[in-house]
Every structure is written in structure tokens, then in C-alpha cells.
Image (cartoon, rainbow, N blue to C red; front, top):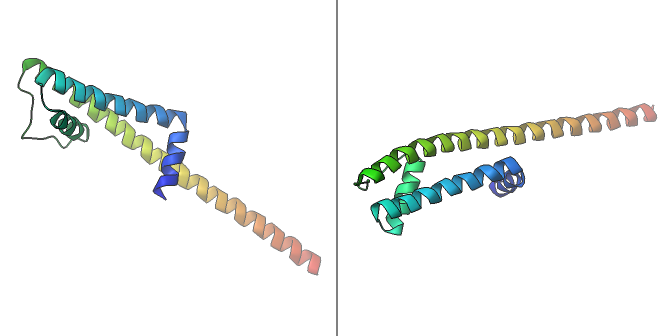
Length: 123
């Protein structure tokens, strides 16, 4: 169920752009922490992802002034982007569910019409 939804999600241009933007912000965070703080790649990935999903990481944090400034802007951008991403996902699943309901209603109408036609021809 999840894989077809993910494929449908990525088929639409606006969702694909949102996914690419989210990935780009994550990469910017990873590179920013790597360049400004000199952390290992794994620490950069861990911290960038934890900031992006708003969990944070108390054990690892920027120590340089520029790292702290970058961190503030990255946190704000990440939280806004993830909120937008979650909202877009919710809209997609809602639209998908609604279209399924409409398909079932149309299908039911067709079946009912055929049943009525068959009943009237039998009489």
C-alpha cells in the first residue's frame, strides 16, 4: 500500500520538487556542519537529520560562532520545510482517499444502473 502511494506521490511534479527541495536542504545542512564545525560525515548526517525532524541532539552541537548562526537558520528552515512536507503528504493521502471513494461511488452507480436495466428487461 505504501509503495504505490509513494510512486503516485513522486509522479506529480509539485511533490517531486518538494522532495528534491527537502533533500537539498538536508545536504546543505550536512555540508554546512562539515565545513563550519569540521565534524565527521556521520556526525553531520546525524545532526542535520535530527534537527530537520526537530528532535535535536544534546550531545552534539555547534561550538563556533558561524556554526551557531548557521544552526539557527538551518533549524528554522528545516522546521518550516518539514511542516510543509508533512502537510503536503497529508493532502496527498487525503486526495488519494477521496478519489478512491469517488471511484467506488461511480462503480456502484454503474453496477446499480446495470442491475436496474437487467431487471427492467427481465420484466
